[in-house]
Length: 394
Length: 199
Image (cartoon, rainbow over all chains, first blue to last red; front, top):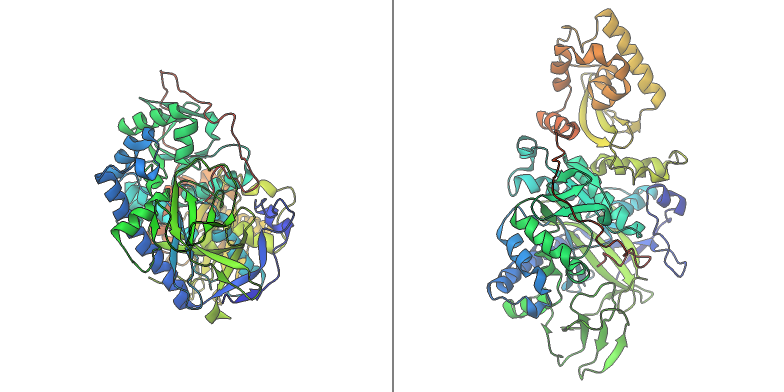
């Protein structure tokens, strides 16, 4: 069972003062809970190891997909295939960060991989900053958290230049390359998340700037611009599949920009392979019965299972089916036309009030930050963010 | 690898950590709600100064930040934000020493390498900003450049700092061919939780 600790909630006034405007859900309930999940050091370490292991499997899975040309199987739009290949083959396309979603991990429940949000994960601000502020606000030991996310991001920005080596070498190798950060206008959550990443890049030592995507200039031969200023890196908090489907011309231009070595795009195009739920099926084939994995196939299973669209988000179009394939619970949404993946059902952990929890572990070169989402059997955009505290410190 | 954060230190979250701490202490400035979203326009420095057992001070860390703040960590581990008035007083006092030729920053008087609080503040980027009115005098001094380096806890902090604050190199590759823009111009955040990204 999930143990929780009741704490004083952060005030809306404070949250807004630091730019966290999305503190209230559309039904006017707080998005942040006034509880923290209690985690032992051993459990935190197990989440860390699980994220590292899952990432290694993802890399092996991506290599398998690329070698055997299985892009179509994973629902990858055809106009991204070359981009994915090109980004995979060269180390300069460094994966900045992603977030693994796991069931289990507390009170002896086995950790199981639900999915990997590898391209444009949310909950970054909540995990890196808000849950830490929650400890501080309540007079708890602010160090008692599996949360080095912000530092890990800074280190990983430096690796864009030094790769695997010592990140202290950044200062010697950095030659003023600039990163332009972009998202779409109209979503304060996306904008603030993007600017949080920009702040980390700044502190790592990069020159950076921000522009909404519609103000960014693209040229096949010359690269990526804000006004007349050229940028060597472009970070976009915009899903690759949205670029492929909604702005096909942009996908083609980006492919040429990468081929002409005029800019590097973050997160790289190959993260779409990790992001595809089809990868769950590939991993099950490559690592059958691995303790971190749940059986996953493109056809219905013969156990209680979850049917997911290939690139769904926020629980949309996720269905829970019984062993005979009959629906037990269904969510509507806009991804109904996507190909489906069937994954064996793993129950989320519960607290004393029968609220369910999913663990999110950020990955930036290694596992680096834990946070929880609380909600129903299918977590949707009404699920709550729950911070955590290391039990031994209480 | 220890994954649990061991240092009880808001400097780990740099300028944002500082905003959080200020917010929690209830001393955020009114009308500064957009402080974080402006963080990219780094015009200031976030500096952590540590007290040394010998009575001197050293720069533990510094980052570009949207507002200039100096944190003082005393030997007992306590940390506090130096007020603007304190900083101005320290800089003013140091300015007098520079005038009189008794400042360790410009003179050749430093023997032990140990610097006072005023000297350390001025040696940091924050000091360079606050004390810009004495800038000409200070920054043209070769001794200052040397002393500045010794003010940092370790050479890495110094080199990273210099790097962080380096002005953008002469850029502006002026392009002759047209650039396409306006992609996703009609799109926008589609829900409260920002389903345009998500996951």
